[in-house]
Image 1 (cartoon, rainbow, N blue to C red):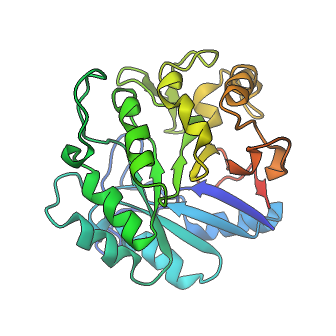
Image 2 (cartoon, rainbow, N blue to C red; image 1 turned 135 degrees about the horizontal axis):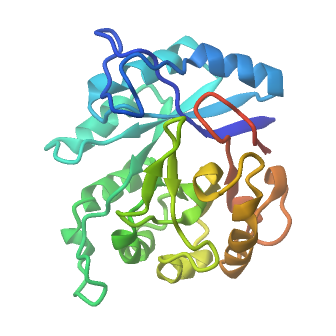
Image 3 (spheres, rainbow, N blue to C red; image 1 turned 60 degrees about the vertical axis):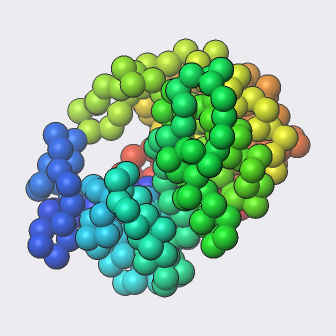
Length: 275
């Protein structure tokens, strides 16, 4: 079975399917689930994981929920959580109640930025989310900023039952690292030979609940598909963390079963995980 482990779909902003807009996600832009299904059929892909885009409020998930309900068995969903919502745990449960949204994506951890500061994970802004994920068996889909990387091992250690997926090669980008290409995709400036937050997360190689997601290759490469310029540095780094790259999901050495491969752009599959 072939599964695309991370893809975004969306339609034009409307009353039925409201979403936030930006220069990259203009109100008229459309990358529909129907287009994705055509691409999946063309490339022999059986399933996909749809990651919410265009806002974190419940109403912004309307199109994601529509896709999951309209095409049962084809997709599972990853939801977002508003940063300042008082009832974040209720929000998670409402999205997950049908069983097709199984994970939540986090960008910030919310603990002390100073790596030498005293650590009490109960003071972290996202601590209730981690605790609730442990209670409800939700997966946490992480794309953390560089400033938060040193905090994650404390939470992983405290909640070993929570499955954690690091997005985009386990790179935690700095705030000034982003630019955008002509397709509205991020380009991230980073030294792949020595990822700046790599040693903060190196010890996670011992944690069986931690996975690395090989996605967003375009963002780290200076050439088009198959994005060869990102491979040498990341091959070496993933070898250090004992989570080497697995070609099409086939295990190549210990730990490679915890690598997930995904497509390169919204509704446009080019690189698939086969399990």
